[in-house]
Image (cartoon, rainbow, N blue to C red; front, side, top):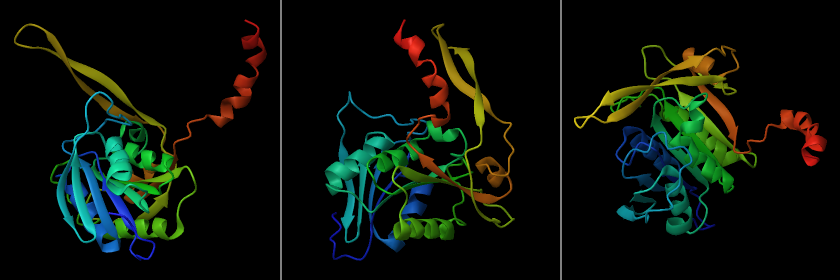
Length: 265
């Protein structure tokens, strides 16, 4: 599906990392279809925690689920980043007006953005100069309740379509889980400096060999009111502008001082 310049509806590419049958994806599709032409390219199974993985040793295959006016849906056997690449280069043969990813079942706030397949898809689009937004809900259940998110998704999508984003910048949007207390509003935040403290649950299989399950707990000592974690803990939607440029600019002068010694080893 190509977006003719005479068409008024924006072309929106939709993906996720929870697989094509996930409730969060279905809600995101529902909202996106109110706004523009929609092409969905999603994984055939969950790819949570895959980060920016791409498939280079296995052939990628695309299955057409449906094609109708203003809506197409495809399933891919690859990662979320593969879905973005295939969506742009094979299915659309061009850039969409917007990429939206999610709605992830679970938080992608703070350090989770590093591991997230949802946000990897967003960053991949951003690298290719496509405005992009990742949406996540703080409910890990497969039957998570998305009934309160429509207006949030619609307003953020329309804002980005209308005003764009700076080059190299995308958005990470996290939404509190449905509760009896209405969401207080939206806060634009920085990423909290938190981390996962990981452990492995080691067990013995029937043949006497070891195997390991990754476990752990989330630790956050950064309780500043400017952070995404604070916003979510206080029932606000958090929006964090994210960039793929990982240069630590504040450290350049420090490392520059080492240059003379490094050049004369």
